[in-house]
Length: 169
Image 1: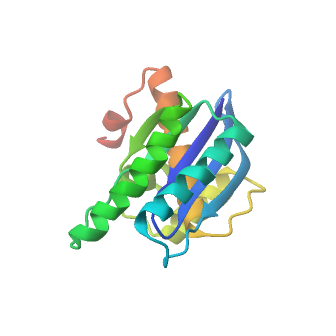
Image 2 (image 1 turned 60 degrees about the vertical axis):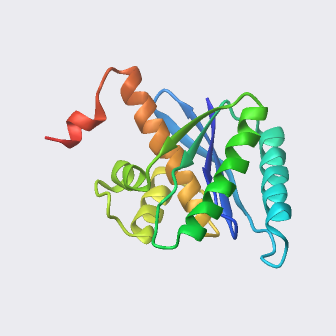
C-alpha cells in the first residue's frame, strides 16, 4: 500500500511517500513545500494545497498520516499551524484519501521507544528503517516518521495487538 506522510507547517510542510507490503516499508519519495513567508496567509495555504495535490496526483497514495498540532505558548502560531494542517487534510479528503492523525510523542515513541526523542534521533531511525532515502530537511524526516508510525500502528491493529498495552509493560 502506498502511504503519504505529512508534517504540515506554514514555513515548511514536509511530505513523504512510502510503500508498505508484508510488514516491509520502502521509501519512494519525499520533499518539502516552502511558501515564501512574505506572501499573504491565504496564498501560502493555497500553495500548500496545490503542492500536496501534485504529490497526490504523481504518487497516488491510498492513505495519509498527519502529525497533530503541538500546542505551544503562542496561540497565534498554533492557530496558523492548524490552518496548514487543515489545508493538507482537506487536500487529501478531496482525493478520498483517508487521513490518520498522530501526536508528535506517539510518532517519536513508535520510532525510537521514547516520546521525548530528539529530532536527530528520529531522523536516524528513519534512515535506518528506510535505507536509501534521501532526506534534505527535518520536515521531510518528520513526514516520513509519521508515515512509518502509521504503518507500525496499522499493522499492530491488523494483528490485533494493542500498542498502548505493549508500551505500558
